Structures are given as C-alpha cells and as structure tokens.
Length: 231
Image (tube, rainbow, N blue to C red):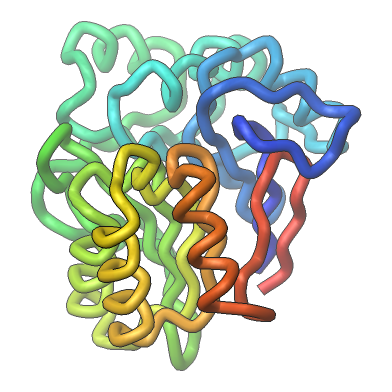
C-alpha cells in the first residue's frame, strides 16, 4: 500500500505548494480529501506524476473547507469518479456533485465496506466525520482527515469494525490546540491500542508531532506534502 501526501500545511518537498489542509493519494486511483485549494492540489498532483483522469475514487472525510476545497477542480478534470461523501456535507452540494460524477455514495453513521479491503468508519461526531480503514491480512490502517471525533475513538471503532489491530494511523490528529498533558495521554493510549506506526500531520500541531516523534522513534513516519510512504 502506497500513501502519497499531495496536500498538506507541512512540506516534505520544497518544489510543491503548501497550504492549510490535507489530501492523500492511496496507490494510484484513490484520493482521500482534497485540501483547501484545488488549483494547488492539481499542480502538486501533476508534479508528483499522478494522472487525475485515472482516478476511480474520491473519499471526503468531513465538510470543512480545508478538506473539500479541491473537489471542484478534481471533478472538472475527471467526471468518471465514484464519490464517498459524508451525510454531513451540504445536501445541495451533494445534489450538484451527483451531476458531476459517475456515482455518489452517501455515508451515514453506520460503518460499511466500500469495496475490496476498503471500509468507512461511518460518520462520527462532532462535525460529522468519516475515516478510512484499509484491511490487510493481519492488521488495519486508518487514514484520518482531522480526527474531530478523537483519534483514539477512531482507532477503537476501526478495530471493532475489522476485528484486527490497527497498526498504522496517518493524517490530521487535531491536537494543535491541545495541551501537553492531554497529548501525553493520547500518545500513551495510541500505543496501548496497538498502533505501532504513526504519521501525524496537518492539524496535529507542532507539539504533538514532536511528542509522537519522541515516543515512537523509528516508527514515527513524517508527513508533509510530497511525502511518499510505502506500508
């Protein structure tokens, strides 16, 4: 499984554009979120040699501007996408997107299999956010947008859904407003839950990123736009 961060407010490649938000390519045909600026997203993807016309799936975690800002730019290029949208997204926007894509699947509170080994946690609250679970033979991987429902809550729910340990978590952990004491507890709980590798980026916050890096050591995998992670 290959994860390529194509939009992030941290930089791993100085040749790419960086703004507040998050988007990640999974292999070559699955796009998770779209960042805040569609034109920058498209330019980054082109520089990273992704062909947007070959995309098959677009997964949107939640309706905040820094994750949906590039949707229009992507569907302008590729009208043959299957969209997995949370029911927290504007119903009027969903209606419009149905006319701009091959298929729209609305995700509610119930977890479900999307296809093959890809699952959604279902929409969790607050905010109305879904996260992506990828099931491997002996473990699972979780991709999160902003973790508004709490990164540990998402991991717990993901473990229950596939009945396997979650080995790796990547995305925004939403700890940039959290105090050191709270982050310490979250790092500890993530380890207790069996998460062995982490890539906290986007809204995770500098302090949390440093604390995860210190605690996880070699199992901390840095994020940033341009980062490519083989797992």
